[in-house]
Length: 215
Image (cartoon, rainbow, N blue to C red; front, top):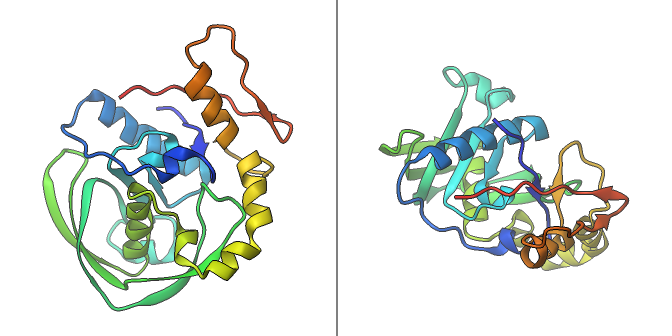
């Protein structure tokens, strides 16, 4: 397993609509494992493949260590491949954060209960109902697959007020315990990754090393 760098606000991949996973192979199996490891190290409860620079329809969820997750039998730890939200019921408003937008937390209204169809880690087709925190995490990560961030769901005035903070995140001026990829590093990767002696840019005093993952 490997810990992958997490793309933060401003990177193009977070605004890229993910493509379906066509089949289960060693690369996807490895990506699932790496995403669980990355999420654990970063202290998250959900992670979408976009967030680690791979725009495919894959999310991982682990709410086993939070209070609501402990009420479920054995907690909830799962991978969802090619998820489709079939129905949504009710509304709840809760505070949300995101590993790709560190240091920002806002109240977001989402459906209280959902029904979702997906393929599991064995690529078997499943349908399930989820409610409460599990429903919220799935919806949050599903948004990522659509190129949508949780701050898109808050009032525009609030987004305007946090512009300075978002610009800091773009520049990599954040204190986090996990490796990140900024807009500048992403742009460098696209244009220079094939150049043998290229040096990644520094952001906010940190060099964000790149891990190239092939799918």
